[in-house]
Amino acid sequence: MSDGQALRWVDNIHYLGVFISCSTKFSCSFDSAKRSFYRNFNAIFGKVCRAASEEVVLHLVKTKCLPILLYAL
Image (cartoon, rainbow, N blue to C red; front, side, top):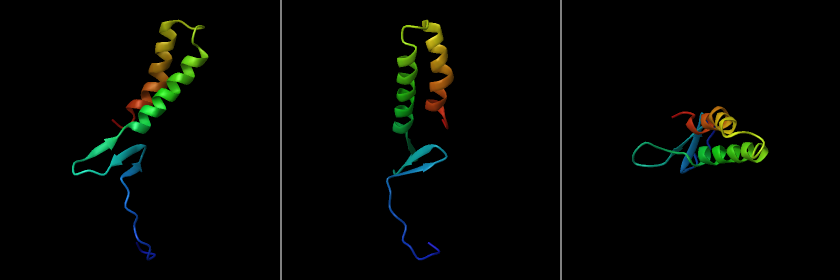
């Protein structure tokens, strides 16, 4: 680097919300996105479990959880 420090070797890099994995081919890791999706789904489902209908729960999942999972695909 320009200030004389050495670069660290890492297996994954986080760039614009996407984890790019070290590999011979281009590959991305979606573990973080899946964790965020399930964490948000469980938070929504825990709050509106029996109070809301299935349609309301599905609409909340589509609007709040799916964008997290599908970001940068």
